[in-house]
Length: 210
Image: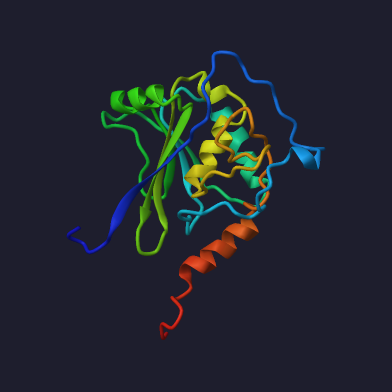
């Protein structure tokens, strides 16, 4: 790009299964050890990070309520994450989408909706990351339908992607890509571990002089 900053659009796509029947709620506590997938607790990759707490923008046509968003935010706040202001977008004739420093809940374009339907994705988070520093610039979240945004764990899962986290294959984990296998566990993604990953991103390559 002309300004010398290398940007790329990292698309974190949730592969949550879309079924007509509401899946049974899965408990997030008292899990028998033999039912847990044998993977490391802290194996989830972080693609990028927020240098400052992002604001949340709610577009009027997003199909999700402010209350549902706050409910999802509270799950992540419970393990140390912080968010800025919740902004209710006022229509001004321009498309509603995330500005730098924001996570926006918006309506998908027709192409995005078609892709979500064809792949049975309940929700999608598109996150823009600065390639050299791995700092997140902005993130847009949208859902296949307004009903999908009210399904348990879906918004929480997509918000995890907007924070920079990839999928986790451990059962009952919030970032498990299969809705019927997921839960509300956030093991390995606490803010302390987030900050540790940020230090790793900022650490000079081995052998590089200061």
